[in-house]
Amino acid sequence: MSLKISKLSQAVVTALLVLALAGCTQWRYDLGDHLTHVNLDKLQQGMPLSEVLDIFGPPQRISASPSGYLLAWEHWQVDEDSLGIRLGALGADILSLDWGKARIRGEFLLVTFDREHHLSGSTVSEWDNLAGGGQGIQPFIGVVSMVDIDDLVRSMPQNSWGATSLQELPRALNTQSSPLSGQSGMEQRGTPASIGQKSLELR
Amino acid sequence: MKIQIRPVIVAALCAMLLSGCVQYDSKRGVEVKWQSVITEQLQKGTSTRGEVLALLGPPSQIISLDEESVLYYLFERTKGNGYILILYNRFTVDARYDRAVFFFDDNDILRDYSTHIHEPEDK
Image 1 (cartoon, chains in turn purple, green):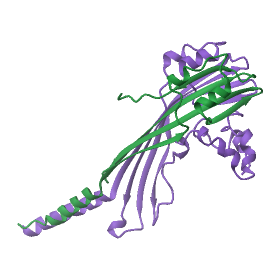
Image 2 (cartoon, each protein chain N blue to C red; image 1 turned 135 degrees about the vertical axis):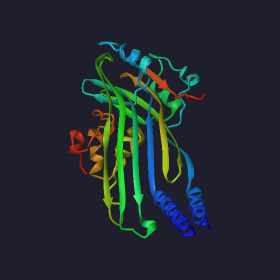
Image 3 (cartoon, chains in turn cyan, yellow; image 1 turned 135 degrees about the horizontal axis):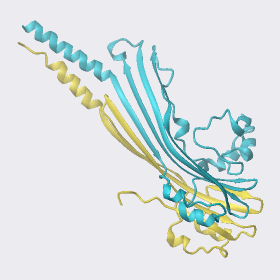
Image 4 (cartoon, rainbow over the protein chains, first blue to last red; image 1 turned 45 degrees about the horizontal axis):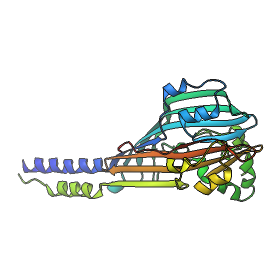
């Protein structure tokens, strides 16, 4: 009887240790304010810029364009979930099991204005989908991250506007044509650098 | 009948010692000076770019379209908190943007402007 209980307690301790080696981590990002649908219906062709600003407030992104201005408002929610089991503490440092996924929800309103500051076009998009994920068994050290959302949760480009001109050449030459400068269009979070005008940047 | 309880207690204590919570915030951008008491001094059609710069200081971004110009001010406030329970960890990060934008014509006269300061929901 004593032997049975002893084995039972050892099994419990082992199970607890294994559980302690597994971990589930969740990150929740909420960037910006929701766009109100009632306000979206108010947008009309030819509307003055001042009226649009009264409705939506200052945009989060702005850029000059050859025909006028581009203004954008956005709201992002990014969820990242990951689960990992490390066996290193049990002396099996050769193995880790990982799983992760990310989900994004968002709204993006783009409004264009002509040189007379009248609304010339608008478009809005909403999305709710998976942003990627994966699972893996990695020996010795974890080399690959199962989820990568860094490009979706970066600080706004306005915070580094002045610094872009102070980069070393040839990067500083990108400044005028960069979508982050406010002079040559704009881009949404998470836009790959290998497409669009950023693909032409000097590095 | 002797139960080996000590390893269980040790494991539980270890789990408790390794748990924790975090709270942090991050602030980026220019100082928020576009409260209504200040922007009330501005008038469309008469205020100049110099007056705006004198009131609000250097902007986060300057945009030009031919002779027109835009001053954009941004203050980014990020708050994060989370708890670490080893088995389950959760972090939430909320970013809000206080911002102001001013459009000037080719004579540097204020043409349009708008400001926004985020009000916390628990206020």
